[in-house]
Length: 298
Image (cartoon, rainbow, N blue to C red; front, side):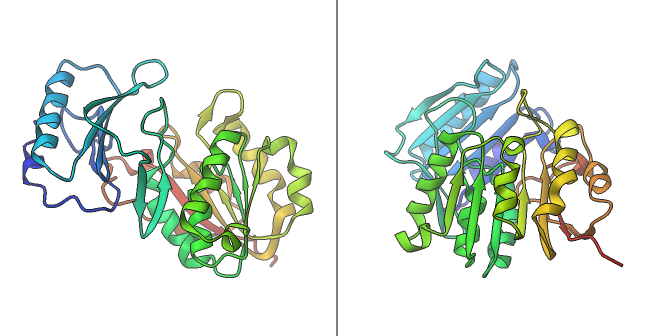
């Protein structure tokens, strides 16, 4: 089933996706994702299939043969709360994701999300390369990986907003993991509902770069079709004449025309490339990240 895994070279230290079944390029494995967070292999199952037990057994055997793998974690996202369990080895005391020389805390022993999204690597790389001297507003910051990339790229200040105070607490730790205290001071954290705190954001405006990376559908707190347009309605209050916007959307049921239509009055600078390992037979269903600049006044 996974014969190519036996031929993998050294996995290295860089975190990456090894198998993106949901991209539709691996027949029979459309419900499987396999990620490498050295020294841990994370296997995520999105559906209950007859071959799941065989698949996990094969991966355990593979892990036992590879000295760089010290633990195999299985997450079953098709079950309530997406439980995780260790099926081989032991987790390191403080698991981290490593990307482009930066480290990020991982929650590999808790249910649901582990705190770091590998498919956002091109977005982090772009921000790091374009953040120097800028004031940045990071909406839906989660664990602040984009903020860490921005500070590493020389951002003057990053304001991180997210409703989840626990996620922002991890975000603060992510900065402390990578930077000395003086650099950490460049990042601030707002644990608020965006739509109830807009006035506070306006008082801190304008921003040179605004990142919009919302969940596609998070219960009552955010639904893309309903709430993304609300952001666009008030966005001009936060912009300079040459602000940049990184607009993201991870909703398979909405293609890139959704963002193109929302930002029709803005100047498009193109789409950020897909992350390595996340190739998709249906690109419209993959993570979408587009760059825009302030609307032309002509």
